[in-house]
Amino acid sequence: MSATTNTRKRLTSDAMIASIADSDRVARAPFGHALLAAARRDPRIVGLSADLAKYTDMHIFRDAMPDRFYQMGMAEQVMMGAAAGLAEEGFVPFASTYSVFATRRAYDFLCLDIAERMLNVNIVAALPGLTTGYGPSHQATEDIAILRGMPNLTIVDPCDSVDIEQAVPQLVASAGPTYLRVLRGAVPTILDEYDYRFELGKAAALRTGRDVLLISSGLMTGRALEAAEALAADRVDVGVLHVPTIKPLDEAAILAAVAEDRLILTLENHSVVGGLFESVAALLVRSGVGRRVTPVGLPDEFLIAGALPTLYDRYGVSTTKIIERVRALL
Image 1: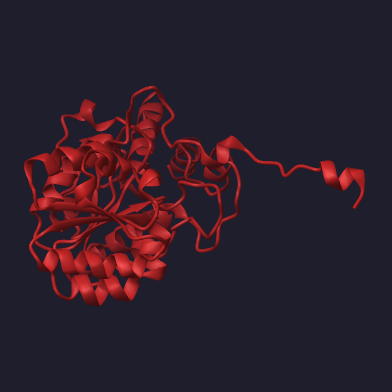
Image 2: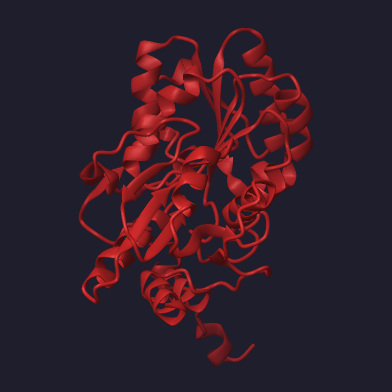
């Protein structure tokens, strides 16, 4: 082996694991702190992790309540079965792993052990959509599509720390299973400025606008609000409807919003196949509403690895690209 080969180093980029937060208004590990607060009030709450507690913010709960935490190792299917057993005995489990492992690897266990029995098990799924630059093995771009057809399962896609903090106690109180696309680490704090309260199963109109309606979920709601502010400078009036619960969908709120004659786009951190866009489009068809809806989301392909800002631009889901798309359609 040559000296050149010996000294060659693999190039890496810190941006590949950059936080999704792009401002100073952040909360650190909001899910972990919200779970711990809920557990102090409710002794039924327990936590499980498939060897990823530190990377799903479950470590906050683990360190404070080690006697109520179960480290399952890299065995997601076993974790789902254990969570089901705990729920059968009256506990309220929160089971954490990455979205790709919860959906692709453990689907059958989630379906038959948990959802079919309508157990209150809460799947805490980190790295949803395009929130890591490490390629298809960790990018859960199709997790909602995989799970939307599962009966009894509630799917929550929070925008920020406010959504997460307010959602956790409602998941505890919800009778059946929930899949939470959790945002980890430094999470933006956005919705506190919009007189907003998370309500399971409900959408929220954050802005009104006569020209454009952006129907968004997850972290894309933050970008929708940024785009709306930027477009206002061009006298384009943009409304934003935040849909934090993908299933069950708040059909009444969406139908009321699309009744106004304006440009409509859906924004999601997920493939355009099987997620928010198709949920909204199917609702309009079933309801006999003949309105065009334009999707802004990830393409139906395996995404490349790279720095997150570059990937957001490449796949058209950055704030800049959203603004460009709206302007092109007007």
